[in-house]
Image 1 (cartoon, one colour):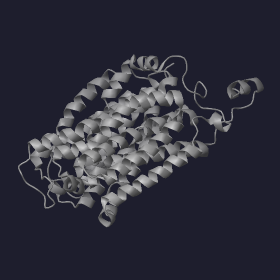
Image 2: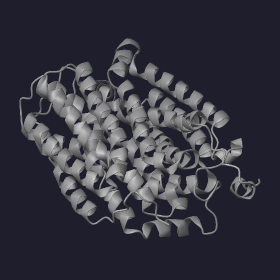
Image 3: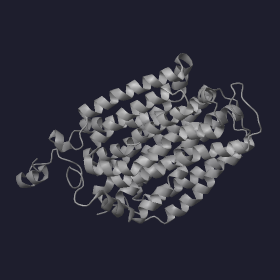
Image 4: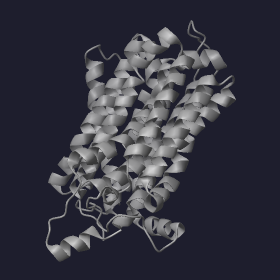
Length: 439
């Protein structure tokens, strides 16, 4: 393939970059898998009664079933980044969507909790490629200044999936049963896999356009994958930015993804559908606010300052939810929206990490950064369930699920404050990039 960059230099022609509509379409197909990934991530929150009854689960076992998604998702992030840098995101996304469909079918038909766990494990591993591959597509198909915006819009698209896994999923499950709905989910995911393969391409050069990637199209060359990984891990920010985002996502993914619904039902008297809607409200505000943090950070020419401010505000609002009782039916939704807005600062982890290493290793460092985000859900969902079980007084709901009191929830939810303290210290030691790419 001829080098379009050299051609433009020789002829004086202006580079012909891909039209925005095509760029966002290619990116959007990766985003479709991320929407499905988020849907699968939080679906157990509205299936608590069904899963508990079907498989006779304790709180810890339920937390573990939900968290099996995170175990494999987190484990896949570094391999995903390395593969995306070397072999491109198109094949990665297609395979991920196909395997997500297969895992969803296994979960839908599971006769035992062990098989259900295996299905969740497969879903997490396969869907885990979506975010990093999507960011890789953005670095090739879009100008560098749009990377932070694309990261924020990606989260918003994902939260649309989470919203579908709230009240709409609850209504479908009530009408059709959870297994039928999950089988249908598998079919939709298979269609997405086919669409990605047909339409998406790794780089605009494959469609005859000029790439936005700083070093042209193609995978990183020369050094081995292990050498690339050692280079990325040699940057201080890589390690520190792995530790920080779990303080945000640990709250949002734990609360909205599993334990918020039973908390709101038992402590505030909401129905399951109402509680699911409130958790969706938290996710929507989280994702919508994340879109604004990128441009704000660019305007301030700082990743560190708005990130730290968001962390402090998140911990303060979480303390209000956990330790101040009796929030009213108007005040509680406002509090959850404010919490989501503050926690949206986590999105800065991705441009911050990308700018901290050479551009050719964007996929690898994005994988590590996303692994840090997902570690929040991986650790906190089962850990909160374990603490709740330790404080269980023996009460059961009419459906047979364990009923936890306010003291139990406070003890379990307070675990997040320790992570917040560690995250703040780590963030203070990061090296500011001033929104400029490392060379």
